[in-house]
Length: 238
Image (tube, rainbow, N blue to C red):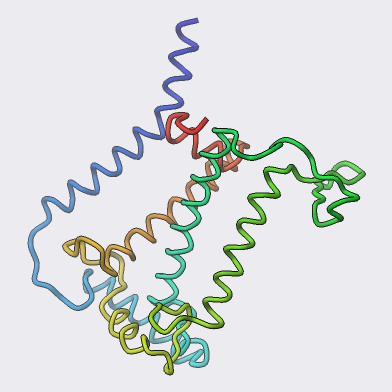
């Protein structure tokens, strides 16, 4: 009996210990790294050259896409990171509300006659039509709302906002080009602390890598991403 409890505790805390070890290793490396003079693109010469060559080759081969910031560019990486960070906020919020039973009639399946075929779901193995739960429908509509807000911000961006695509006619264009010229490479400038583009770029990269790890772990374990997140925080959500 005690062995089962020990195994359960060990399996629950293992991801947390791994995350703590990686964090400690990263901070230890940066703490003992030798000081180096500031450069416009903070990374090793080789990594910087590879990144710059990739961006240059893309711009030469696909100029119509590159001028908008599409492809292997700092602009695209920044926005991908922002979407990943926003995704983590949404998933953690879903886990919290699921754990506190904030979704009304969460397990109730939607009525096919009332909601139509958009509420159906099938695994392809069984005949017939099953509908999604009320909880899943609420989360879906919330994500659709956020998606259309992003579309609106892309089609009609505010004059003081960072646009998704580069636009020479936008007031922020020169600032975006200057910012993008100072970022990129394998590692951003770790000496730049606080609220700045370097920190945002690094946080976005960590969020994207975290999503890959979460999806992979959930697939291997055969569980939802919400269950994985709850497991990684030691069952704090539910």
